[in-house]
Length: 186
Image 1 (cartoon, helix red, strand yellow):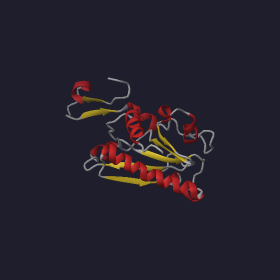
Image 2: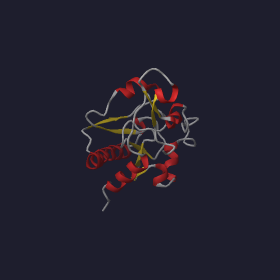
Image 3: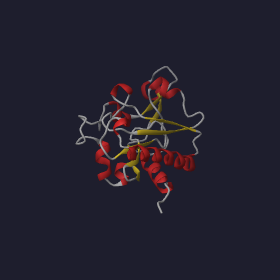
Image 4: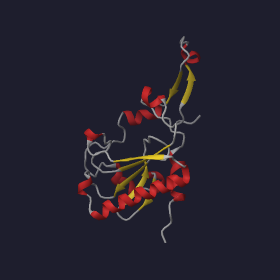
């Protein structure tokens, strides 16, 4: 078993506990819970979305690079194929985007949905931007659009009871699949 795979163990086997519950160990999620990789301030110097374009597509989990915005995998996805569309420019508020940036973010969101439908067959999507810390933005200083594919029955008790989401596909595998399926520019 690799370092990133969750471990499911019967509690009776590991602790002698009298219950019949199984434990779903996901130690890699502690990075998200502890805020590792979250910017220490709101400047572009510490912003992971500003740093991503200077890295390779594989290292930054970038699926597509546009002129004013890019598409990348969410490092802490809600579902397999969870994408983010980010403008290159470090801007926090949707109203501060230029018209050209807003148009490209919208176009890349639509293309993301088409690519996800072609590769994964979701039955629906959650789309959205969390504007500000109080609205739930993990990185509030750099605007990003979420594209979360959804399938009938993909929600279960785990997120409700354990605040944990089981994501069955590795980010690198999903990135390769989506980047390969992205429409080629003529």
